Length: 238
Image (tube, rainbow, N blue to C red; front, side, top):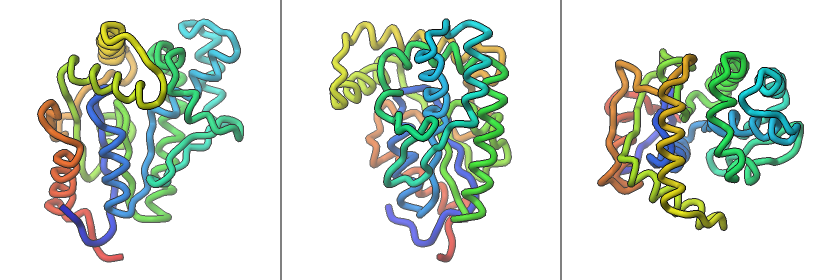
């Protein structure tokens, strides 16, 4: 499905890892000539700073460093070339590694870290709306916390097994081979941590559309999202 015109407003894309959130969010932004923000990359980048400093990701020192590091982040909101820089360094590849993946839930659960990054995310959204008129934002608390006034909120979901298989395929494509059983265990671990943290737990906003992607291809999910933005009048003239 193709749309005519440019996205106006915010599309909030939430859900756990492995639901196809990043892929369809980028493609939706590209199709609608909108900006794109991967908030998970921001949490991963501050987690990388914690690991580089040799700190325990559960410690108060780690939380303080991660919150302070937020000011050094430079997310790229171009859906054709998304990425993130930390103190001027491109860390997009490094933040996808297993060490960061293991530690990110603990770091991102810290209230001070979330407060610092949510403030920055809101500023980035405001800037994108002023520049291009629309933005697709993906994460775990976008519709519920970061931008509860979003024009469209979508919560993608899929079974643990399907999400683990997808993440394993992504890792292999990126040259990071892993054990399928270990990947499934990590998916379950992250789900548990993200959904039970005290600050901004992972859940669908009450007014979000929940879309199960178990049996849907990326193209099918994108078609549904494009239908929704058209239906809600979120795309208009150039």
